[in-house]
Image (cartoon, rainbow, N blue to C red; front, side, top):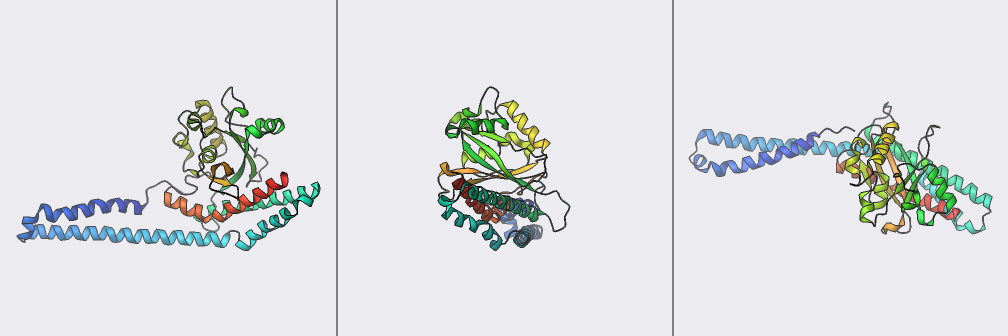
Length: 330
């Protein structure tokens, strides 16, 4: 999960000057080549051979990287939750929801507890698959961890819920209350079982306000507000993923939190209501994946999209389970 430039990337850049020089040479020195001057003929042939060699090495390296990605995805598939097991976690929710109006309060509470357990299992599977992509079986590398954050619209939160969120809120600008923000993201589920973990709530600015966009915090708040997945390959560069007008004290608090939790990289994947994922108002939360290593989902766009694609069925399962939980709580 390093940040070094790949060999394929270096070869890709090397191809450009190699082709340009090999193409320009016979034009610039056309008279010498037409006169069959040996020095220029040999030089031209060597340039063509060099350009061909670079192209061949590049093709081989790209093919090797694609094969390596395919192998990693196969290992993920073998070690992750099978589709049958995943279906077994999700399908009982449909049966419960079909009769939710006739359930007693105790039965609803029991059903919600089962859904909570299923969400944690899926979350752990997400983290294991992200870890497996980079590490062979038996590796001693630190695990990938994650959490699920559920969104609350402050305008519709009752005083009791808002007070509860405020008690564990972090990264709130001085002099502001949670009600001055549009949403609050609350960490409800975590892949860790450590008793040291303390759930937090994070405010989200109004994305419809130009000033709110400039004050967006990095990571999950930005993902939720903009409606797009956010990947931070290195949390030491939080400023590069932060709104231009974020309170410097809040950003320092954010940075200190990541350092204390040993979060060096993270991915924040948007969660929608299952009924309509296209409308931004149907966002319900964020799935966070983080590691103490740089590049938890890779450092290139291709790597990131490959891993996100391999986790998509888990995202769908989490959205379905969260929807079931909300219906039972209504």
